[in-house]
Length: 163
Image 1 (cartoon, rainbow, N blue to C red):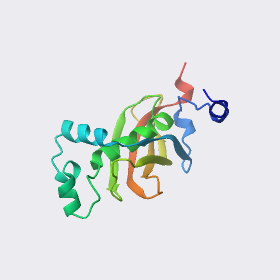
Image 2 (image 1 turned 30 degrees about the vertical axis):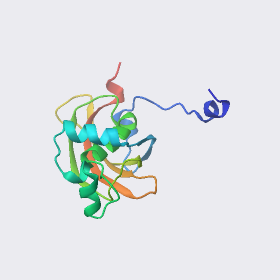
Image 3 (image 1 turned 120 degrees about the vertical axis):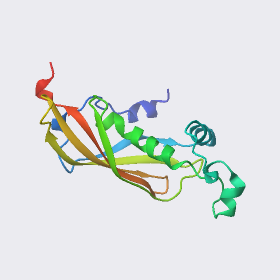
Image 4 (image 1 turned 90 degrees about the vertical axis):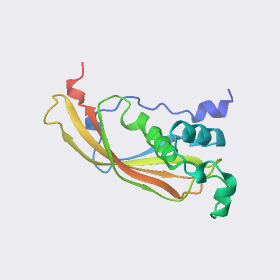
Protein backbone atom coordinates (compact mmCIF):
# COMPACT_ATOMS: atom_id res chain seq x y z
CA UNK A 1 0.00 0.00 0.00
CA UNK A 2 1.50 3.39 -0.95
CA UNK A 3 2.64 5.46 2.05
CA UNK A 4 0.70 8.54 0.86
CA UNK A 5 -2.51 6.50 0.94
CA UNK A 6 -1.87 5.45 4.54
CA UNK A 7 -1.11 9.07 5.50
CA UNK A 8 -4.46 10.20 4.06
CA UNK A 9 -6.42 7.52 5.91
CA UNK A 10 -8.82 8.92 8.48
CA UNK A 11 -10.47 6.94 11.27
CA UNK A 12 -14.23 7.46 11.06
CA UNK A 13 -16.71 6.67 13.82
CA UNK A 14 -18.98 3.75 12.95
CA UNK A 15 -21.65 4.26 15.57
CA UNK A 16 -23.36 7.58 16.14
CA UNK A 17 -26.13 8.19 18.62
CA UNK A 18 -29.10 10.54 18.84
CA UNK A 19 -27.01 13.06 20.79
CA UNK A 20 -24.54 13.31 17.87
CA UNK A 21 -27.19 14.70 15.53
CA UNK A 22 -27.41 18.36 16.48
CA UNK A 23 -29.70 20.21 14.01
CA UNK A 24 -27.59 22.04 11.43
CA UNK A 25 -24.66 19.62 11.61
CA UNK A 26 -23.42 18.67 8.14
CA UNK A 27 -21.88 15.39 7.05
CA UNK A 28 -19.84 15.05 3.87
CA UNK A 29 -20.04 11.34 3.12
CA UNK A 30 -16.59 10.17 2.21
CA UNK A 31 -16.70 7.31 -0.26
CA UNK A 32 -18.35 8.37 -3.48
CA UNK A 33 -19.35 5.78 -6.08
CA UNK A 34 -18.84 5.58 -9.83
CA UNK A 35 -21.87 4.08 -11.57
CA UNK A 36 -21.06 1.83 -14.52
CA UNK A 37 -23.20 0.36 -17.30
CA UNK A 38 -23.38 -3.03 -15.58
CA UNK A 39 -24.72 -1.47 -12.37
CA UNK A 40 -27.44 0.30 -14.33
CA UNK A 41 -28.34 -2.68 -16.51
CA UNK A 42 -28.61 -5.11 -13.59
CA UNK A 43 -30.54 -2.73 -11.32
CA UNK A 44 -32.94 -1.76 -14.12
CA UNK A 45 -33.59 -5.41 -15.00
CA UNK A 46 -33.97 -6.62 -11.40
CA UNK A 47 -36.42 -3.84 -10.55
CA UNK A 48 -38.32 -4.30 -13.85
CA UNK A 49 -38.02 -0.57 -14.57
CA UNK A 50 -38.97 -0.65 -18.23
CA UNK A 51 -38.19 2.94 -19.19
CA UNK A 52 -36.23 2.70 -22.48
CA UNK A 53 -34.11 5.72 -21.53
CA UNK A 54 -32.37 3.40 -19.06
CA UNK A 55 -31.59 0.48 -21.38
CA UNK A 56 -31.85 1.60 -25.02
CA UNK A 57 -28.99 3.87 -26.12
CA UNK A 58 -30.57 4.73 -29.47
CA UNK A 59 -33.88 5.67 -27.84
CA UNK A 60 -32.03 7.81 -25.28
CA UNK A 61 -30.04 9.55 -28.05
CA UNK A 62 -33.25 10.24 -29.98
CA UNK A 63 -34.52 12.00 -26.85
CA UNK A 64 -31.53 14.30 -26.35
CA UNK A 65 -29.19 12.18 -24.23
CA UNK A 66 -25.64 11.11 -25.02
CA UNK A 67 -26.54 7.49 -24.24
CA UNK A 68 -28.50 5.50 -21.69
CA UNK A 69 -29.56 7.36 -18.57
CA UNK A 70 -28.86 5.72 -15.20
CA UNK A 71 -32.06 4.50 -13.55
CA UNK A 72 -33.05 7.32 -11.16
CA UNK A 73 -33.87 4.82 -8.41
CA UNK A 74 -30.31 3.48 -8.62
CA UNK A 75 -29.14 7.08 -8.20
CA UNK A 76 -31.40 7.49 -5.14
CA UNK A 77 -30.42 4.21 -3.47
CA UNK A 78 -26.72 4.79 -4.13
CA UNK A 79 -26.77 8.25 -2.55
CA UNK A 80 -28.89 6.92 0.31
CA UNK A 81 -26.35 4.12 0.79
CA UNK A 82 -23.43 6.57 0.83
CA UNK A 83 -25.02 8.24 3.87
CA UNK A 84 -25.59 5.12 5.97
CA UNK A 85 -22.16 4.85 7.63
CA UNK A 86 -22.34 8.41 8.93
CA UNK A 87 -26.01 8.55 9.83
CA UNK A 88 -27.77 5.28 10.56
CA UNK A 89 -25.29 2.41 10.70
CA UNK A 90 -25.90 1.95 14.43
CA UNK A 91 -29.37 0.64 13.65
CA UNK A 92 -32.88 1.77 14.40
CA UNK A 93 -36.03 1.64 12.33
CA UNK A 94 -36.11 3.42 8.99
CA UNK A 95 -39.18 5.66 9.15
CA UNK A 96 -39.39 7.04 5.62
CA UNK A 97 -38.32 9.44 2.89
CA UNK A 98 -39.98 12.75 1.99
CA UNK A 99 -39.54 15.27 -0.79
CA UNK A 100 -37.60 13.01 -3.16
CA UNK A 101 -36.54 15.08 -6.19
CA UNK A 102 -34.22 14.19 -9.03
CA UNK A 103 -31.86 16.72 -10.59
CA UNK A 104 -29.69 16.39 -13.69
CA UNK A 105 -29.54 12.98 -15.37
CA UNK A 106 -26.77 10.57 -14.38
CA UNK A 107 -24.90 8.62 -17.06
CA UNK A 108 -22.70 5.53 -16.80
CA UNK A 109 -19.25 6.70 -15.72
CA UNK A 110 -20.55 9.47 -13.46
CA UNK A 111 -19.30 9.47 -9.86
CA UNK A 112 -21.83 10.26 -7.15
CA UNK A 113 -21.06 11.95 -3.84
CA UNK A 114 -23.39 12.81 -0.97
CA UNK A 115 -23.83 15.36 1.81
CA UNK A 116 -26.40 15.39 4.59
CA UNK A 117 -27.54 18.00 7.09
CA UNK A 118 -29.38 17.24 10.32
CA UNK A 119 -32.80 18.87 9.97
CA UNK A 120 -34.48 17.82 13.21
CA UNK A 121 -34.35 15.43 16.12
CA UNK A 122 -36.64 14.57 18.99
CA UNK A 123 -36.93 11.88 21.63
CA UNK A 124 -39.25 9.01 20.71
CA UNK A 125 -42.48 9.16 22.67
CA UNK A 126 -43.10 5.42 22.27
CA UNK A 127 -39.67 3.77 22.43
CA UNK A 128 -37.60 4.37 25.56
CA UNK A 129 -33.94 4.87 24.79
CA UNK A 130 -34.56 5.97 21.22
CA UNK A 131 -34.74 9.26 19.38
CA UNK A 132 -35.91 10.23 15.93
CA UNK A 133 -33.62 12.11 13.54
CA UNK A 134 -34.35 13.64 10.14
CA UNK A 135 -31.61 14.44 7.63
CA UNK A 136 -31.63 16.35 4.34
CA UNK A 137 -29.41 14.45 1.90
CA UNK A 138 -28.19 15.75 -1.44
CA UNK A 139 -26.34 13.80 -4.11
CA UNK A 140 -23.99 15.37 -6.64
CA UNK A 141 -22.09 14.20 -9.70
CA UNK A 142 -18.37 14.79 -10.26
CA UNK A 143 -19.16 18.25 -11.71
CA UNK A 144 -20.98 19.33 -8.54
CA UNK A 145 -24.41 19.19 -10.20
CA UNK A 146 -27.25 18.04 -7.96
CA UNK A 147 -28.63 14.65 -9.04
CA UNK A 148 -30.99 13.84 -6.14
CA UNK A 149 -32.39 15.55 -3.05
CA UNK A 150 -34.48 14.05 -0.22
CA UNK A 151 -35.18 14.00 3.51
CA UNK A 152 -35.18 10.76 5.46
CA UNK A 153 -36.06 9.89 9.02
CA UNK A 154 -34.75 7.11 11.26
CA UNK A 155 -35.08 5.99 14.82
CA UNK A 156 -31.68 6.29 16.53
CA UNK A 157 -30.45 4.88 19.86
CA UNK A 158 -29.79 7.36 22.65
CA UNK A 159 -26.29 7.14 24.14
CA UNK A 160 -27.36 7.10 27.80
CA UNK A 161 -29.41 3.94 27.23
CA UNK A 162 -26.52 1.92 25.80
CA UNK A 163 -24.61 -0.48 28.03
